[in-house]
Length: 355
Image 1 (cartoon, rainbow, N blue to C red):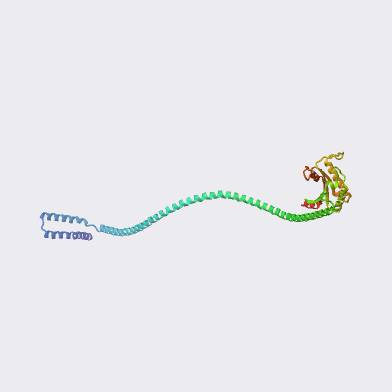
Image 2 (cartoon, one colour; image 1 turned 135 degrees about the vertical axis):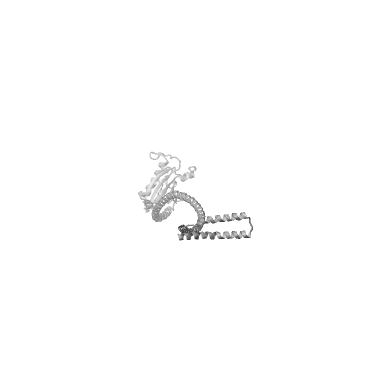
């Protein structure tokens, strides 16, 4: 009770201590400043009302402890809230800094994203172009492969042709060498033949030197020796019997030919175009006359020593004239006998045959 009374009066005294300065100020105010009594009365009435109101401030010790505990608790909570507020403020500042950084990063990322998008669009376009180029390359590659295959086939064909040509060329080279040897051999044979023909022609000319040039001629034509005997040297008009002078000429000719075993002799009879006057069962025209005259000459030559196997007779009548039969002189030229002496070309033909 005493504690309760003491506490009550203690709180009352504190309330009075609160009011005391106010009452003192009021007395001083009213002493220094003259005022209406009514206002003074109202002031004191108001003061006492305040005083009695403050009496409500008087509380028990338990309530005071609760209030004090609440106060301590509130102060602790205030300290905690203040610390939390400071931490939140600091976190907010950090968050704002991070937000600013994020905004900056977002701006940079936006720029980078737009740049990347443009680059991606460019790359897509380039990819499409490369893809189209690749497809064209595939098409071109197929064509190139076909062309390469065709070129390869052509190359192989050319190589095969070249090889065949090379073998042919080698063969031709060998054949050419052989041909050159043959040609040289032929040239030697022909040279020897020409030399032999010239020697034969000289021998015949020397054998017939006693006869007039108008009666006979000796010449070389196409590798052959032609001995042309005029009609007046051998025969009378229309006759097939050789005159004595003609027999002598033929005998001398046979003497020059009989030792030549590598020659062939052809006796050809020729006439003009005047029909024969004396026909018989064996002689109807100039053709028969030319053949029979050639036969007569052949017999004389063989009788004089020429081998029958080397000589033959033929007649061409009026069909191989030397000149036109339009004058006595030309007709006289056409009435002739030609003895054609040909070197034996068997050796030459043998070489040509093997070639």
